[in-house]
Image 1 (cartoon, helix red, strand yellow):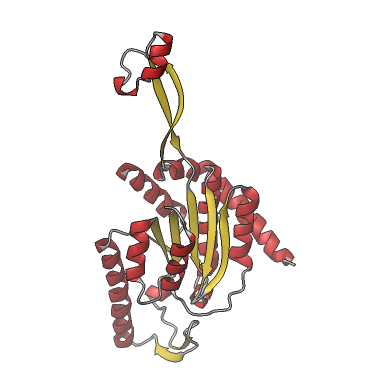
Image 2: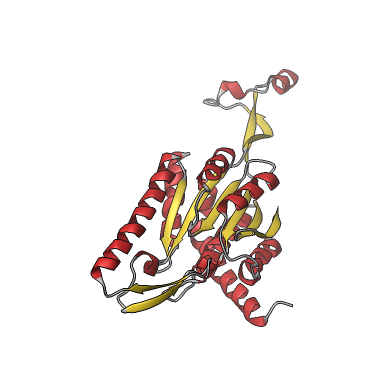
Length: 291
């Protein structure tokens, strides 16, 4: 049975994210992600200025008056939320853990999808697949997605983005929109990322915590890697040690962004100390201009 505190959290996220979708994201999401094509809707009489290539010659011959075909966008999409729930998501230097921050972002995307009558699927992963929900429509389904985001207790601690992508490629039978939400603290996954990006419409959302980019000066600190359990000490008061560490962090982040750009990946980097609304809206608007 799901604890009451989890149900309350689901309700709180539902209220917050549905409000954002109704006020901000619904239209932007629809414009940013086009349907699979155009499908025939009906015919109507030809008017001056209509494209003559759309004339339905069979109806025209039968009625003696020119008629044209009307097409509508075939809107329905399948959206996969591919969410990293490894132990590094349990970190948070501010008011929110990375995993809770990611759950809110995934919830907004899920509600945006069902508002546009799209199907939503969920894959939660660590170094293994923790949970898979088949893509479905409707509010009841997206609420289950949120419950799983908040309630799933992972068996694994480490991260394998490659395994998650390989699994998605097996279960996604047709081209889908894929939101990959992770801190990307992993290695040896870019070749799989390239394949996923070619076969599907991939958007990578990188979650960052300020303390992971810039350690605060708190003196000698004992640090444990949440994924490996390795413990080490850092002298945060040492300028030499901290400058060296910052250079390493900055280099890794720079290389990640360069690789993403080189392979044409859509990447949104969002810090847990900022509101995720603006980065997502900005991405949707830029994407709409590209289409």
